[in-house]
Every structure is written in C-alpha cells, then in structure tokens.
Image (spheres, rainbow, N blue to C red):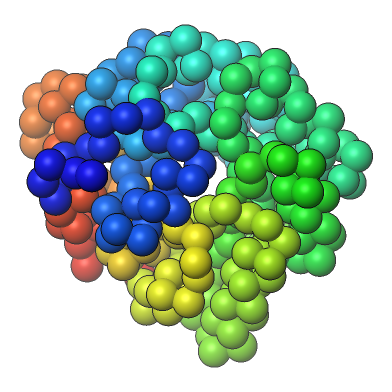
Length: 274
C-alpha cells in the first residue's frame, strides 16, 4: 500500500502489481530510459515502469522516426538500463517488423526477456495479425503490453504523427481493439495521442491498466520520453510534453516532480491533452 496518494510503492514493481495499482486507483508512473545512469536516477525517484523504447532511434541516434531501431539496439540499451534498475519494472519495445509473425516475435521476446533482462515487451497495433502475436506470446508466458492510438511504427501509412480516434467510427474501432487485446492476453495498454474522453472510456472499460501519453489524465498511468521531460529533445515542443527541468533545476528533482504530479493527477493538465 501507499503511504500517501503521491508516494511510490516500496517493493519492486511486477506485472501483476500494475493491475493491483489500477484496482487501487494508484497512478502508474512511467518514463523511457536508455542507459544505466538515467535508469538509476529514475528508479531512485520512484518511477514504476522504465521503458526501453524504440524512441531511442530518434532521441539517441537522431533518426526521423523509430523505424530504423533494431532488436540489437533495444537489447544493448535494455541491458544497460537493467544494470541501473532495482525497483522499477523494465519494459522493452519490440521494434518495427520484429514481430511480423508469431515465430519471429517469440525469438524477439526471448532476446528481450532472457538475454536483455526485461520483464515485459510492448508491441504496437490492434490488427488481427498483431492480436495473433499477442495471443501466441502470452500463451507462452510472455507478458505483453499492447499499444493503440498513434503507433509510431505506422508513421509511413499514417502519413505522419497524428492524433488518432477523433471520429466516431475510429473511436469505436479503438475500443473494440482494446477489448480484443485484453482477450488475446495483453496485461497493459499504452494509449498514445488519443482524445482524453476516448482514453477515459477505454480505461473504465478494461480490466488491465492503461498508460497514457497525450491521452488525458484519466488513464491509469502516464509515460513520457525522458528527454521530453527534461526539455532536451530537438525541435518544437510536443503538446503532450512538459519541461519539468526548467521548473526544478536538476534532473533528479524534475523526475521527482513528474512522479508526484502524475500520482496527484496534476499532470497531464488540459493543455497537454487532446
């Protein structure tokens, strides 16, 4: 149990623990991490979930999208983050085309969970082929986090990074895909760049925790790219991000403030939502 509404759990975070946090209405605090030093700072500040995201292709390697990120890249950075983590749950992205078939997905998951030390994998999309992969992995005891809304690996098909689920038919489709992901065995769901009202509806309808990024304050948890939280991502600031470093003066204090504001449901505010 939490000592206060904004205190992190004392014990290490597990996959079942995420669902307990949802059931107890304790917001989940998540951030991306790519190396041991940052992982230690984030872990010490009480972040619940560290995601080694394929976003590293953009913020670490300087690519224009996440598509060039490889499984080798994720494995390398995941091993580094594992060395700096003692309490947070370590989640790893499955890169573009690394789960194109169930067999390929199983080999990718083996590398991320066994070789790199992750505790959960995340994959994007709600199409039937993706649901088949989720089912195949979870039947083999691989914990899976699904990802709906803006799925960065679909950037070429979508024609850019755009808010998803504005139209009524798209909203219904996303709700159906969320339920299908649960039925396939997903144990968490990231909702990215969707209208806050839709994210609230999906969150209330599901038995698994939702983790939002640009999806409003009513998700069961929040995640940001850590570099966005620190205001060091090149280019124009994205609407759903906030520079916590400029308010606090140190990396540790910025992460601590973010964790507090997520647990207190201060962040994201209306101006960070769609």
